Image (cartoon, rainbow, N blue to C red; front, top):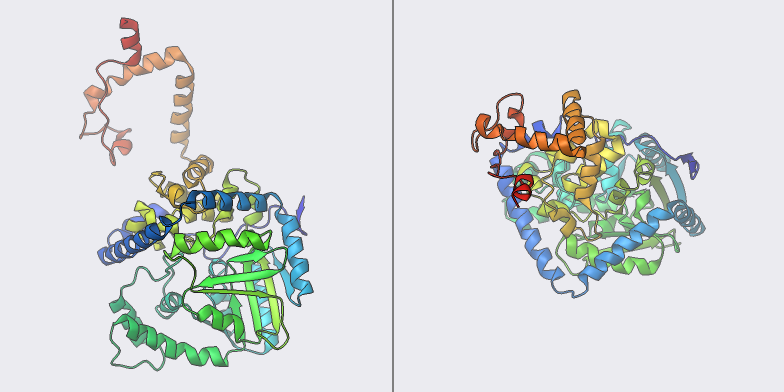
Length: 474
């Protein structure tokens, strides 16, 4: 089977998806950063409160969630034909479509297109896809300077940092830290700069204004693409996206193939879901849409790079493919008790939090991120918050079953399975389990080799009478 000319199981993703160290080790380090935890707690609490208030205004919120989920499921069921339709519409409207099987191919395409313009600098709209493929690093290696124009992304870039949140990449920074970054790395900044938020925003505005007016090439992502019209859409809050999408001569959009919607009417659902779930707003301050090239208005050269980078492999998994429904709202991060304490960097991926725990292992292969499916309490808060009803807990369990396990653990689980399938063996095991009341007590734990299980949890109290004993006595 081929996927629009590419292998159905396209090369696994590369770029910023593989963690430098397993999540447990990275999380342990992050937990020692008390300032980061305070920053995260304040930010996620604020976003949750705003989001909850505007969601409560809609009596049909659950119906909207169901509609969004149904539309995404429909997209996944006929993705190849929708992508072909999108390519036809974009081409007819004067744009050029490129297909990228993986990160390397996407970076090569974008680098070549920028070089053909003769420019050595590009302005960028915040884009998870370009972060995923490490496009900035590829452009810099080619002698091209990428300038992030989203304020949070700019903070991350100037601080030589990495994003830690899908919606607010610099959520782990407070305003004093941002002031220090601007003073250290922002050209032409006033030495008397204070940490007052309006003052910091004004400094960034002055820095970016000249760049907007003098850069001829922009690189963007896309929140949505509409197959029936070839229209692309970017939603954002600052207006920087509008500048990038309208001022340059050349616009290059890198979009994951799952971002497509069948019809214009489908967009109505997501423009209600996304702002409420992400920023706690009733609608996005800036929603920019464009279809191909319009002579004399906006960029006169438009290129759309459709990125696979492991998505075909995710699509082949009937359980895991739900991860491709994600609209990058970050609602799951804002309610996750694990993310709130460890931050995004511990996940070692551009996609942190619960969605990253299911998406990154699938894009790269579970072997490269085997610890991420365990970065969860399975409390289910992410499922309740997801505006398109992605059953993240179920996918986490599904991926845990696929992750490599130590030989001893596999042997124990195989034995437990045999015991639980045999009534006589199970009854004997129940009687033997009573010994745990002797060798291990609540608060003390079990001796080796079982001590690992009770190192992080209390041993539960065993009842005086099993159900079998109770039944036999009656």
